[in-house]
Length: 148
Image (tube, rainbow, N blue to C red; front, side, top):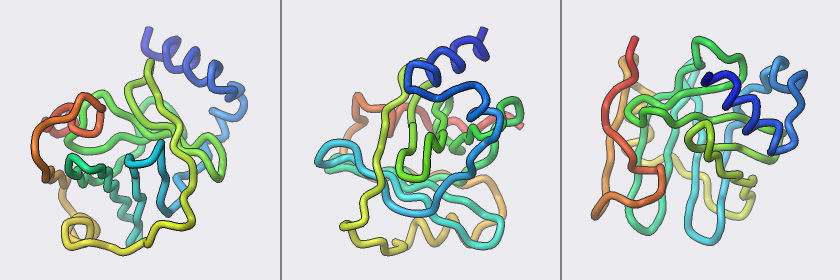
């Protein structure tokens, strides 16, 4: 059932099944949705980390490839949320049936903050949330680590 839902969502975003099978790797950089929601993907060696932030706060977590779907990535600490690189400039993020498109943002400064650096330097699953109160956006949905 989840595979069908993922396929339907990706097809609705214009992603053909063949593109999904190719599994475009995550592109390092900054992505933006609207005027105040950002995702930063950073890498150090084989380690990928996510930094999602808005005016309400931020969440930083290690990224792992999904064990079932090629090209789909999970963020430690944010259950049920996935990342999918639709094309080189578009990152899809959210629950499988409610993914939002974030576009490359070449104007925002790409600095590596302290928490993101901690994630990159760690070998263990990493998650840290900072901010005011939980947002209705998926950025702050859950704090449980991914099952192994």
